[in-house]
Length: 132
Length: 279
Image (cartoon, rainbow over all chains, first blue to last red; front, side, top):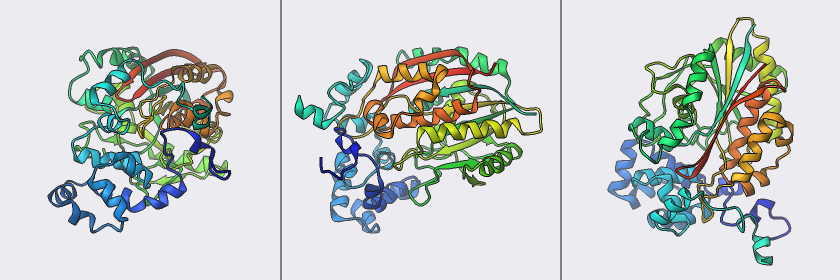
């Protein structure tokens, strides 16, 4: 971890939606917000690329959307409450995309939650994990 | 004069709303959860509040990245139900209580808590799921509701300490309102959960149990939990728990715990619930 990085960057598998990411992801998130309207969802589904052309997003962000790279969108400034609107447009729930982001099958993820969820042990700190 | 008779904390998981709306509450997955709220429904019925002040967060429904108020108090006559992408939940429109809401706004602003006053706002599952859990499926909600919407999406949310102190200011404001009203304060969200990234699904039962213990008896200790500790221990979305501290601050220091419920999972989340009463 770089000296001037915020302390939460040490938490593994977690992207904190801070000022930097909010600025980076503004248009990506506002694109997702537009999917709250049924007519926009239809227009997007009709021609995803054409719909995305209206938004001043980076090519990398557009690619992540088209590929439904859910972790990639977070890395590029997306926020989960916004990207979940894209998921809803695809008919996916929070639990569906959570499973995808963790690299599990839907069954594995649902089973993990029924068994009490992911333990914090070993999942608190990157530094700690490195030290082992 | 108005007085706060009780406080309720509860999670506000959207899937709970969907289970209610689709008549799935008897499913084996959901039944234990709804059973945990049966006594709470009886309690609310018996307590007969005249007004509920409900602390929650909006999930990119009423507010987007265009405007991000840290604390927004709903002062309108009514609050329509938001369409969160699947059509609005089939629940009654939320009627406000503008007299008390405006009184609280004026009082806490002069008490140095600079709230945003909102006269037009749709409310999403963050507000309606707690009402459904405590009221069931009535044609009308049992009383007017004052929404207090807190930013917990854009980092940083307000600190737990700030929330607790705002709760105290709200408590003073309510006590200085001249009508005889019985008020119940809800603090919602949490408990431990993470919806995003490779660490999604995090649940921390020990953290949650300690939070519930301290909420009743030693809330000041909870006000010292830092943001990085919430994120690390309770998951990136577990930081919503700061909203419970507004409720706790509004209640008396010696308020009594009368009911507690904890259940894992509801979708990705640990569901926690407590009822407190002022003596």
